[in-house]
Length: 103
Image 1 (cartoon, rainbow, N blue to C red):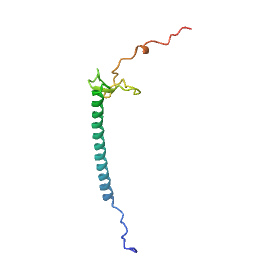
Image 2: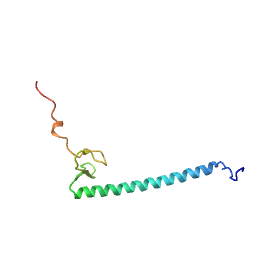
Image 3: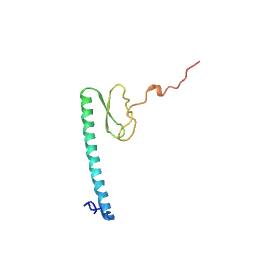
């Protein structure tokens, strides 16, 4: 105590464990809040796109989940269901035709 400040004691194992549990709890709460906000923004964005006619809704034939996808230039549409991974869109005809170019 040369300058009037008491040196900090080392934390006990129990104190360290409690501090770690507290940090984990706060981190979990923060991540849940961010996740909820992202979900709200996602709903808001796709509702706006749907109202503008820039979103497409497809129902998955396997699980019945409604997949809402943007119809915007430069954005590739995922042909798979976001819930189960089944193909929603049929394959294009070009996928069934081989490259049989005659020379």
